[in-house]
Amino acid sequence: MPNIFGLLLTCVIVVIVFSLLLFLIKRYKKCPSDKVMVIYGKVGSNKDGSTRSAKCIHGGAAFIWPVIQSYEFLDLTPMSISVDLENALSRQNIRINVPSRFTVGVSTEPGSCRMPPSACSA
Image (cartoon, rainbow, N blue to C red):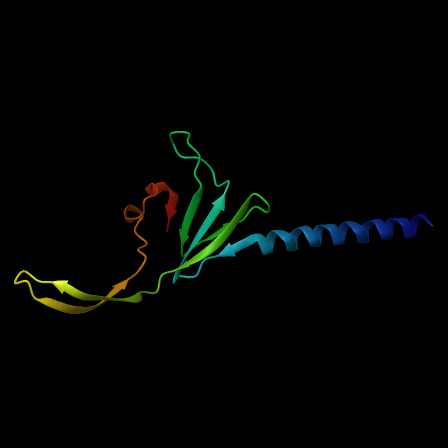
């Protein structure tokens, strides 16, 4: 009988360790090179002691703490926006229509975002 108890205890320990390992692997998220991973929630503090609300990662990976943190991906592919200006008044007081198209994208340079450079890691 003690042999069965030892075997049962070993199986329970193996299942618990395997479940914990699987849980940790599932919470480790990789960021593809064409996206920025924004981790939000409790992500740490700045050098001056103030708390940060988000952390951006481009082309890396991070462990996402359950319940405390979450993540979303921000796409880096450029998008085209059509802005048609109709009945604009020119300098010669002539009404004109100006069709225009802008291509915008998200930059990955740390200085281009409003967050401090320490919040963006490449």
